[in-house]
Image (cartoon, rainbow, N blue to C red):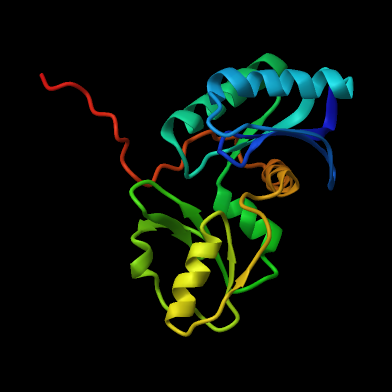
Length: 208
């Protein structure tokens, strides 16, 4: 087991699995569009460990969302199972917290994520909330926008005559997830794997 290496799990469309050593990505595998996260993510993890010659990492950083309910549950279940098998901590980290770590020096910062029903999730950078893009607040001077909805937000703000700088990447870097996890571990925060749900699930229990 390598205590300084972090396994990052991100079950979103722009995610996958990565092994991060301090500030560098050792190995990375990306989920293909439409992939079955529950079936594919464990295979990606096994491949990363095999290629790196690593038996187990020292800590796990798992993305808690917001995102697809099914993908989040699959990601967090895998993180919990691996943490138990390897007896290592698994820290849940939101997209907003990872982006805040990655781009926190680019203030003011909005984190924007595409959601269902032509809506977006917006964080400034935290907490996040769901809204209709037409209901965006006014942009503060010098605004920076991150996330896979950044281009849409930029265009809508431009229609108002308000400017913003789009930051690179639809998803946070695995290095940012790993850094937040290490900060959590160093601060003594207990590992928590709770999904960051914003919308209610589309699935409903059958009527009695």
